[in-house]
Length: 472
Image (tube, rainbow, N blue to C red; front, top):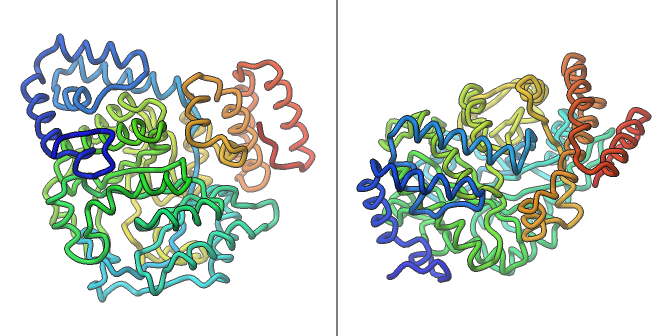
């Protein structure tokens, strides 16, 4: 099969021969500094670079060029996302699963892990616990099991989550990370009011993919890889992609994920809303020593930087799989969303003591949401609990057009500060509140539009009086 970015067939828009040719081209040109700096000059326009150009930058080992890659990634991140970091938490509904993924403890042959599925009442309790932390945005997760976790269960759970109003708390955006499904089912998810539909490819290498998924519905490479096209056909215009770095060679995965982004842009007119960059980590029944494609920290940071350069407008997510130290390094290179206070076990938020017996993976960063929020502010970032664009219908191409034009800052900056103010007033520890108030006072003055800035200041004053949920 020949490479075709506009094709709807997985093996044509993620074409193995094209990837191998790109990797060979990159190896041959890794010392071609004229080409490397030509690519970097193109990247400075912040319009993105191709998967082939990205492969060259990844292969290049020139220290000066690599320093320029990091510098440029930081500049592009600042240009489009400023110092704002969106906060979220995963919510695991069920770990019942019929697949046999060799890297995931949920695989159906694992008899060690206790299987659990939350009732709607238990979901309410989890949501209350998350609201009491201060969260406004969730990503719900579930194993693939048509008997225990049918779509009807997911839809009912979404309705339950949105229905819970506790004190000043409310979950305003529910993103969904569940198995590939049909166009009809994606339409039902859209009608349920989801934010982003998230599905990790795990690996773009078809042979490796089929070996890593030896049985179960997830074994079907094409059906899984073409899921985002069906999601968009079903009306979901915010989709999130990702690979699990460490399963296959990272060079292959970087080219693959950028080809996927290019395909979505070419066919649907809008690329991925988010790209996630998890790495393989230990979990029950899973030993990372079984995977020999581990990605060293330095390479991982470079991957983040190159993705930011290649797709400047796309949000990038880092999870609590990574340590505080690693998360701090990649924040400046391109990450725009971060989880805080996360539990990766089913029913984990209501437990006063962390119980990881049903966890999907080990959490490296175990700090509370308040600790993560304070840490971000001490680093000069603005923790944002904003969900305004989704609630105002600024999704898909409407969101991207505002982002690309630079006008989004007049929405995002004040919205970030106002939702941070909500967090400080309702949930923060005293030290966190003090740091946050100082940050808001300084950052509100950076809103470019004078009228927006003036109105935002009025809203912030009203929030001192107890009012909530202002947005632009």
